[in-house]
Image (cartoon, rainbow, N blue to C red; front, top):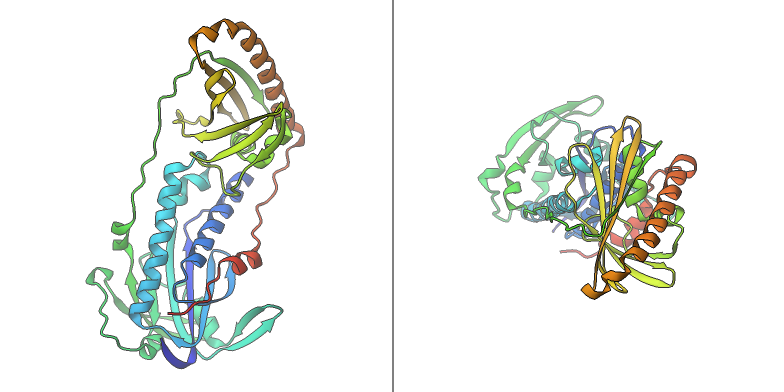
Length: 382
């Protein structure tokens, strides 16, 4: 990196989510953005410092150290591919059909890179930056660039960068242009279109299976709550003990949105159940959540399916539990198991209905920015 009296200013910015009305969609969009912001912090290979997380963007800086264009390209490509690989994987494993989850793979990422003299201000354990070029960096996020994914490098920064002989691939399709801003004037910059980098993004394919339903118990119940909220109550494990009162303890290692392949364990009647979220293909507007318990006692391949069917601002829930016997000769216990499982299922569905209609209050998703920065902001330099 080149020594400089100026500070390197760097802003990766996420965009593409619509303004959602449903609280579940708002929460899921915030959660997805939070995961992506953490990913950008993890891929900070230039050892940049974090000023703050600003909504859907992160404001990085490096005092008196200006990266070369080659180093900047390496940094942006690392972030770009990690960002889109994550979204592709998320799309392949998602179980939710809300607007936020369905459109997450359409999110875009752009980068603004600038430099200039700034004044650091320490506020507690955080550092803020003050100066005209801080304002310029943020204004450059609004421009007339026709692409949604690009690296914008200001002329000032270009002039400060060390010439290492690096020439970007022609597919980046560089353009020299400028934008004018009130009280700032015209700012000249070069932008590099990142569209072609999608060729390097790893492809993930959703895996669906035909689940054999044997010895199936099926219950149907209308619930006065809109479909996505009901689906969130069912699939979001933080609500599970509030309506499934047979669960004494629930252990889940992930705070992320529940996806196919995720596992958790429950203590039910002194039994520890290992449960896997399974991918289930739904029909039309139906939303389906599935779980599988590989083995428990004399049973194997125990499957639970919750199908939420929209009825305007209400929902029709179809709950199914199916199982197979570990050994064929155990089939003589079927009548007893049917009665017991039917009774347990009926109570669980009643409790779910009551909780959804009378007790459930969706809490807005909150991001602990300071904890995120402390945990993931890198400190090493190239």
